[in-house]
Length: 170
Image (cartoon, rainbow, N blue to C red; front, side, top):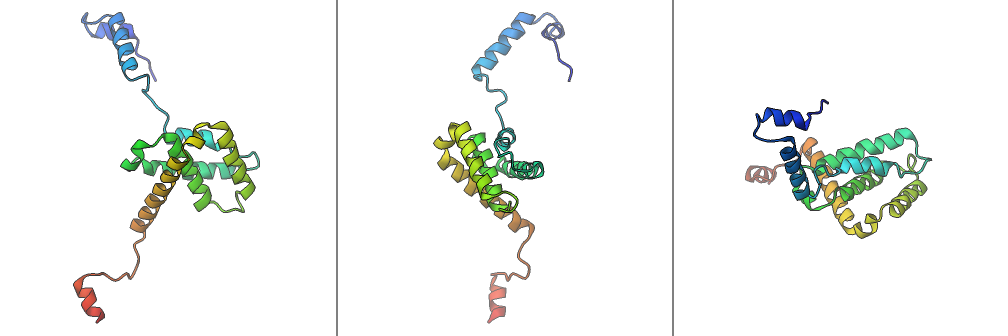
């Protein structure tokens, strides 16, 4: 990426603004936004949370959990339900759902799961305060996965409940 210098921006304004004017406006905008110009996403949190997995978890398994969790977190972007939830809650909900619903105990033992939750609890002070929100996110993510699978694999041979179908069954 090539950086644009403030001096060059001032020159492009053809004397309308000085470098000092531009810097002052940038500071005003950042202050107005409370410096929240690029908050961390659920995917960012997932990357960090996966590092809290026990060292006994293999790198391929970490990678699988990371990718599956990111996929679940991406689903949350399309659902207004998640607007009111922190990215960190969505991230942890995604990981926990993946571990519970998609990863077998032969690949990720019960002890490893407990150690992971212990590590999260000790490392992330927000965890204990957000258990209820995390559980709500988990439920909603599961619903989104179920809904997606249902759309991709409609029941074959399912009978319509139209009046014609009902009359045919008589």
